[in-house]
Image 1 (cartoon, rainbow, N blue to C red):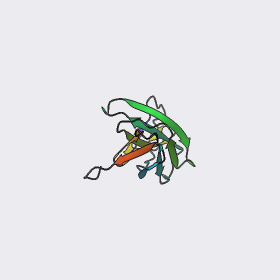
Image 2 (cartoon, helix red, strand yellow):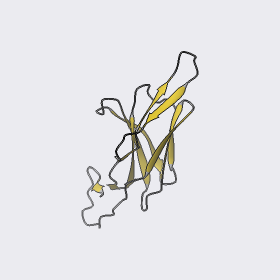
Image 3 (cartoon, rainbow, N blue to C red):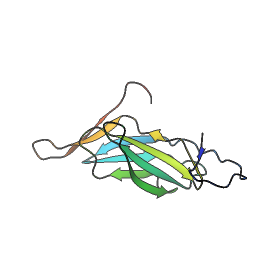
Length: 123
């Protein structure tokens, strides 16, 4: 289901429904890589990261419709949730959380690593 963007003033146009992006997350070296499938009629995507308390939301990026991925080059050490949201000018999709949580861990050996945990239930 889509929602009108805050302060949208064009009430006479017919609503455009945007699908929720299908998001995948993978650790790669010391980064977290998000990829998603294109959403019909989307003009672009927002990428958010939520901290461990799920209250702190950080906008990591805004990309055009051709951008179907994002690399978090400085993921937090503690688990974080990633959310991708499609938008169309005055419309935007429901946000979709990437499955599981991801964090960056630097072991004492100095070699960086990234851990991803997945929930037991579908989100």
